[in-house]
Amino acid sequence: MGTRAGIKVHPILTIVLALAVCSEAAYSRDNGQTLGSGPPKRADVTKPPTARVQNKSEGKVSFKTLPHDVLHDQAFLWLRPFRLQSRDLPWAGAFLGTTTGLMFTDNNVAQKLAANPPGRGYDFSQTVTKLGTPLYASAIMGTVYLAGLASKSKHAQATGILGIRAVADSMIIVQSLKAITQRPRPTLPGGVILNHNADGEFFAGGNSFPSGHAAGSFALATVVAQRNRNRPWVSVAAYSLAGLVSVPRITERRHFPSDFFVGAVLGCLIGRHVAHSAEGRSPSVWNHLQIDPYPTRGGGSGISVTWNFH
Image 1 (spheres, rainbow, N blue to C red):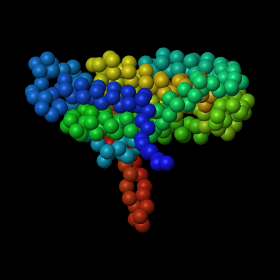
Image 2: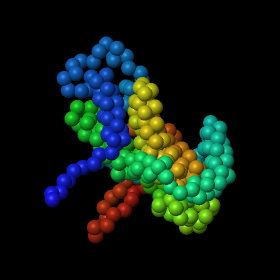
Image 3: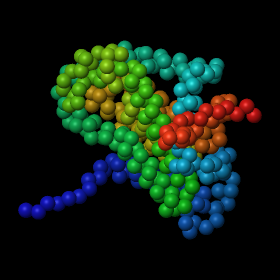
Image 4: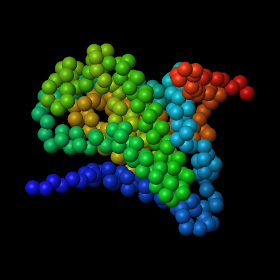
């Protein structure tokens, strides 16, 4: 008997890649950036200001500056909650209120799910949430980057790099918060055995809060949406896919509702910051802060922190 080897490609992943590549190809075609596209149409000359800002900054986004950009993002994102302004209060209050309300329902939802044996819905959740891992997210944005190289689209190349940067930022923040909050997951792997009675308690040794799937997928979706603001269908598709791969983490018994909500909000904020900083729109005086890695004597490494007062 012979053996047959092959590569199994998930159908949803194929759809995601197709949507991502098609949206970037459409953007490039409308802006006269693809090979053989010729001069741009007359309508393209009067592009909105956001598109012009994006085109001027595409060359500044590269893999070479990725470590520096991620370090700079971390400094900004961790300090941002301490610099709330009056215009931030409505959404901050809505966020805290929604999170608190969901926490009151966490144990009830998790215990009811854990009490029922896994069925077809559980199997579906387990399958689809695999697309929310950092590996899949990086593969999607890597494909967008390669498509940009093939079509000589700087916009697509920058979008791919920014997507990877947003995922990296979300991973660092989420893993740090997991280590701080120590919230056990609703169930152990398999979804059958109760873990800490699915009570949602914090500081009890765990890594449930917040959801990394939600943070990473919504960070990626926000970057794609912000980079294609003139195409509403791209935003709808991006956020729908983000929800598809992260919401089932609740029905998979691996996260509480508040875990998902907080992760999704964090992802949106991270993605928005990354997309806007690439356009030169990163707010506040903290743009004067510069954090750079540098090698030290003896083969070690360190971090240089400088502040530009000009």
